[in-house]
Length: 505
Ligand SMILES: Cc1ncc(COP(=O)(O)O)c(C=O)c1O
View 1 (cartoon, rainbow, N blue to C red):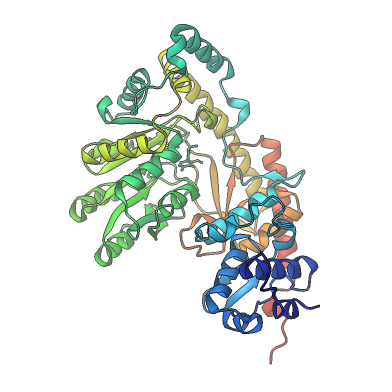
View 2: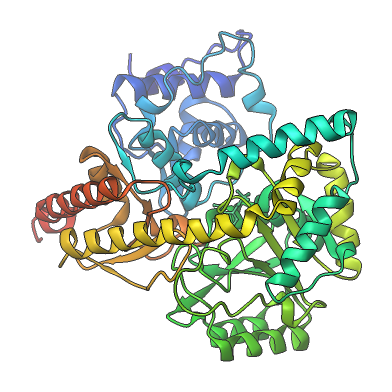
């Protein structure tokens, strides 16, 4: 029986809700191939008529199918079966463990282009033998195991019960002191009372967003930017407004014109060694940005996570050093020492600091005492600076390896859009008119992954970029991954494109 025939005979006596029956029917049709990838589903009004249900039930059923990752909706065009849907979630709508009802009760989560791209990327990345040029982790080969092992042992031996006890919401005082000393060393002295230890920089971003923003607020964000920034601000139902970048960093003319149209309370920016472009914000723009923040009254939320991983050029220092009143600074040890430690911090002054502290208490009370003690010991023993030096040399070698490989294997196919004087990523523009999402599928087929640029753009615009990361892989893997990527681009470029394949009427 066709799925439409099944829909027209829903069991109204069943214990399963009508929504549930519609979802199961359409899912089975997708899994059996009756509904093919890319195929359009009937409009909700037609579905309501076919199944003799009210329109809202039809809308709810499509919403659940979207949440299950089986279909996607495009405004003005309709709802379509997703390419990877059947393999991705076999049996997802079944209710063998009694949890199926939850899908009909939980609120819907708006899915961005970035979410879809990332979900597909993670799914692909489970395949064996892939070289993940998409992964922005630091290298495990560089972790300071010995020093951390010693610092953890000391924390337990010297502090015994304190190591396992709750500590201050703003952070373990010894670690806060060390972070204040590090800030001073970097030319941005901080009052320890302005520092709050967080569970990674990511929590810092979320806490700052929750402290400053309310649902519906407009947030300005660099485009492209780190995906986590977009997720953090969107988690409180804000409207993310992308501000483009050029080779000098954030386009301040675009920001100024935005400020003329919208009230912005929060601008998220990485002014040094930006992820993904590697760019620094040009000196004249730094000054103008701070003036704009004063004139229009908004917070600059500065992410400085790659600030210490610079191997070329002079460090311009943090924006925070130039304005404590307007800049909330976020950092972590994740990229230099290890992301698994989950040690980050925020520097903020005035009422916003109190709001952030309130959010920290509401979120997780404080970050883990044991790792804070260990990190405080690591800093106190003078291990950090030596490790940063090693990390710079280590990542520079990998950056050079990736640049060399890109110049060799991607010649005429993709161009390095911006230099990477530090950080962990290269940002490339495709030379050929190819769609980066189609390229991702082809890349996986060729044994390599990258981050499609649109995943890093708040509005998913511009399907012509790739982020390749060099931190996590060895030089020979970087070279081989890039070679495979070149092969994938060439093979996609050879394939006739939809528009070219269609006869001209
Ligand atoms: C620019 C940027 N900010 C923040 C983070 C999150 O850092 P953490 O692991 O400390 O939460 C990352 C992680 O990749 C990042 O690239």
